[in-house]
Length: 225
Image (cartoon, rainbow, N blue to C red):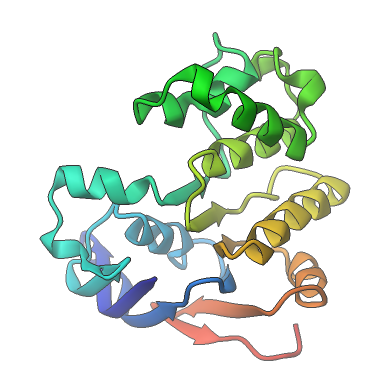
C-alpha cells in the first residue's frame, strides 16, 4: 500500500529522516512512536503526500509519488483519511456538514450521501450533537468528529497524528476502539502516539506493529511495550 525506500527529509541543514525504508501492507495496523521532534508528523506528511521525499522513493497504491501531478495526488488523497491532533473545522457549519465536507469537495450530491453521513455520525456517537457547531464540542467530541470526517470517503488508509493527545483515558480508549473496528473492516491504520498504555491495550485486541522513530530511522519496537 505504501512503501518508502531510503527516504530522507531535512529542514534546512537539520536532517530529520535519513535513509528510511518501510512497507505498510494492506489491512495492517501500525503505531508510530518516538520523542517530540523525532519526525512523526513529517513521516505522516510524506505518507499522504503533503511533503515530497528529498531523497529516495515513495510508492503509494502502486504509483511512484514523484511521478504524480497535482490532480493525481488529489485523487489518491481521497483514499487516505487523516486525523490531525489539532483538528480544524468550519465553525459556522454544524458538525454534520463539517463531516460531509469531503464528499461535497468530491462533487457528490448531499442527497446521495445523507444516509451514509447519518450512519457515520451514529457510529462515532455524535447523533445528538449533529447540529452543534464545532466551538460547542468537547475535545473528545471534536476528535470523534475528525475521525468521522476522515473516513467519510471510505478510504483504504487512515493516518492519525496523536489523536488521543488532548482527551482523557476513557475517550482515548473509545477512539482506539473505533480505529480497531476500521482495521477489522480491512482498513490500513497508522497511529502516531506517545501513549504506551494505549498501545498495550490495542496489542491485546489486534495484530499491531509498533514502529519507533529514532535517529532519523524507523525501528521495530520490542515486545515489552
